[in-house]
Image (spheres, rainbow, N blue to C red):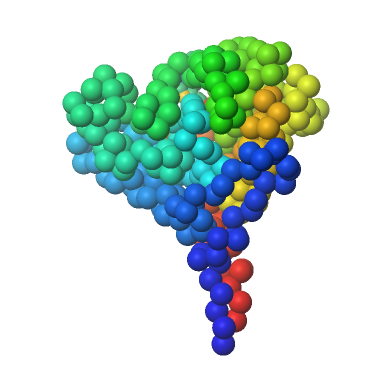
Length: 306
Ligand SMILES: Cc1ncc(C[n+]2csc(CCOP(=O)(O)OP(=O)(O)O)c2C)c(N)n1
Ligand SMILES: [Mg+2]
């Protein structure tokens, strides 16, 4: 019996679909297998579990979970150190993959002086300038304007860097976001806008109320650029999409929009109780059907050959 474990096969990492004029990203060794990405995902989930325990013990005051959003780590293999990241506050797995240490989340949670903001920023809104991870902003949507501002500075740099601007679907309703996308289109700025679409802005449902979900359907483009829809709990498939999109932005220096469909597997924050506005059936269903960690494990099992 021969067993081939895809967790140790670097060829499981899909390569970009388009030519990039010699700029094709080299997948660094630390991302060379799906197992490595899985490690970041499971570490993020563990951090969330531990943070929740501290909240329940009354030792911490504020927690935002990334549970359900960990598949965003599928972007990590295609980013280079010259890129800049404006992350969504649920992007623990991606921040870990991009070099933020697990300790940083706890220093922030406990408002410690060594924390990224000297304890001045609300927890779960990290930054790490050494790794080009920008401060996650409190007023949602403002990050998009900052992202295009940085893109205008780095646009002509030799390494062809880009800016990741990851947002929630609720944030995408903010005027600042629409303004930022318009500016990136007009000035041909290398920004990957990723909307992590979990269908809720706290307790408000967002379908049919965003620039990518109209009352009469789902548009294929916005402001002239294609809208790519990606299933966020299918990490190998998401990697395939991200590889191509990042390569296109790097090569052609213009923005792209990705709608990254996910489910929020938690309350909005510890100040929220989703059982007030979500049925128990829905809560149970998304946990079994849209958990990216389960998705990675089943991809692993399906690829096992006996
Ligand atoms: C300008 C502004 N308005 C309102 C809020 C309060 N607020 C914080 S998170 C949030 C919902 C964001 O939803 P979404 O963008 O879909 O992200 P999700 O939490 O679902 O991942 C709101 C309204 C805020 N922080 N800033
Ligand atoms: Mg949302």
